[in-house]
Length: 338
Ligand SMILES: [Zn+2]
Image 1 (cartoon, protein in one colour):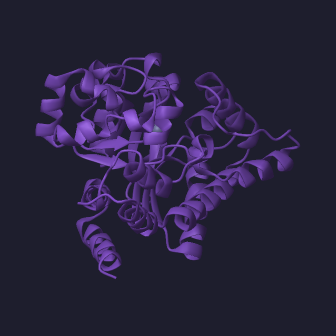
Image 2 (tube, protein in one colour):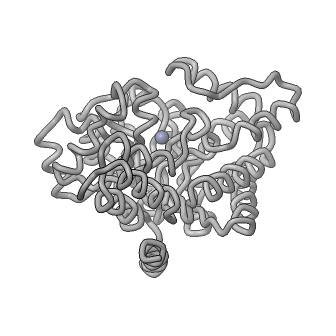
């Protein structure tokens, strides 16, 4: 395909407006800055900019946000409504599988997991009514809170399986604990009918990706870009067809790669890995899913077919029912043929 400036601008316009599926976004990391400011004034807390400065500040700001701004379950309702509404209006996200991390505030006794999930689902229903966005949730089992707490969360989650909660993820600092210790928790989650993903191969290398595949049986890989350090594992992952939830801007912000131009996504695709584009934490990384697609075109040189391939991969690798996936495909086809 000829890549004149006009062609590139046209592809950017197409991908920005396209109906999208988001598979790797954190609920609290997706609220607009205005929502964060509103929670600050609700609790009389001095507002802070969430804009990413460095990794340590990012973690500190995340902890501050959970400690100071999520004090009652209703805060999650507001965050969910505003985050999902922003995703729909800014990027035309029509379906999202969204990480939520209520484990820490629940462990601190602020509210029950049921109260948190009820509030999140109420916020999601309000966003759906306003914009049409459909969202289901993947409960983050945080490495820092340990497998026993993860098992306790599964108990509380049972009534929500298939009723707004679709899966579990493993989040938090990869160095905090080895994936293996979560094997019984993930086995139980699978028995409960939950789908499985894990953050790995981001701050830690390829062996952590292998550990999450082998010990946890994950069905999608959160980030996973450092798999490229192990060519044999790349071949294996390509053979398995296990999809990668790739987040370009996030990887640059956290220092994993030097620039979007240097991101290994093109090499991952060339190696036969199934990849999708995602926004991770739009609030912190000053991005949107539409921006991520635009960056893939302008900075990674993806042409129309490659960009549309990423849109289709997100539908195909989502955990939506097949009939709904067919609807999403038809919606995308209708948009592209317009
Ligand atoms: Zn993430």
